[in-house]
Image (tube, rainbow, N blue to C red):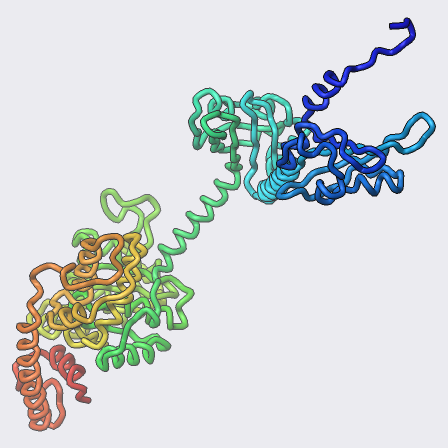
Length: 569
């Protein structure tokens, strides 16, 4: 070979080079006949390269434009083309001799389906990343993220507002950069691979006291970083103080229920609610009478919430829960030095705390006889005298009292002052027992089920008619309180997937339906006879209920219950 002569490739060498490339290559002569068809082109088109040599490209290759390039002499670069089930990108160029005459054309192409798929994935990832960043930026909690080496990679605006640090101060910097006092929770998470909760630190130039919760970030099984949520303890303290204030307000304004919370479908209960609503707007003393568990306290709440005093204090007092030795001091307060152990400066009593509002005296029949005169003075004179005090303190308190005892009997036996009885009994409201308001039973069950669903995390939706019939046969000596207990245990006995209360969910003490039906028929016969006896007693006594009660050998309270039950006015 001469010195300036360039080396030439043999046909065998050229073929090896063309077949080793990943790109498909096809060349045609000036007639459009295929002269080169490499292995990659055969793989992409699914043909044998040897079968393609000598064929006209226009006939052998779908969608080819090599014949067009031969005719126009124009190159076609980066052209997207569908080839079977794939997308290829193709460059087509004319081949010219030294005089510029077109002697052929060549096409170089490759499958870009994977590239397009990757591009779509990258686009989706960018969209997801943008969405996550928008969510993090909109969070009111300060958030910081570090990589597996403990260098900052992300913060949100809330972080900047809390610490004073911007991205330039944190991104790419060690996780300890923002800490002015305490241990980095990020580094602890990266060291242990475990979350950290409730760590207290001081951060930023202002040394803000914060509480930090941090968690590891895993990609598969590999620990790739840590994310932390930072809470300003100043805000937490403020919210705690607001909560404490709200709790104090709730303790002062204890009336939680309204008449909407009272289920009154039955005639007797509807009558009681109607009477209670009428008396709510007046300052009159109300005496709620009924058996234990009938809902007297519920009525007391509702009366106060429907009264002009609803925005004032509502103080509850269970007269049986206060020690007899402390009863007077609790109710009426005491002066400084009134007795050994008395608080310096004295103390307000419950009546003074209720000033301007209402006081609910539950189990009023249990007030010691020695204090009844003081209570009478409040009702009559609207004033109290503290224990150890000498001067009267005026108060404006509405009294709502409740009892399940026979006050008339207590008066006869000398356990209750007669003048106090009449002062308390200004507006008596009789709340019927559950056995006398069977129409309310299904609705009571629905309300209780909703409450127990929340308390027990259940999803009970209804109660079977068989259960309603079983419950309606029971006498309910404990009234609604007993019903609450029975339903609560039934729901506890249910599986978490059960949605309907069935008879088998109840204890065996409930009678069988046949026995209960017989009991109901017996009660109906007894009820008819009772109503005839009451009507006869009222006729004989000219409508005087006290005399009628004596004639029947029952208390006036019991007579009123029975009058309500039978719809007698």
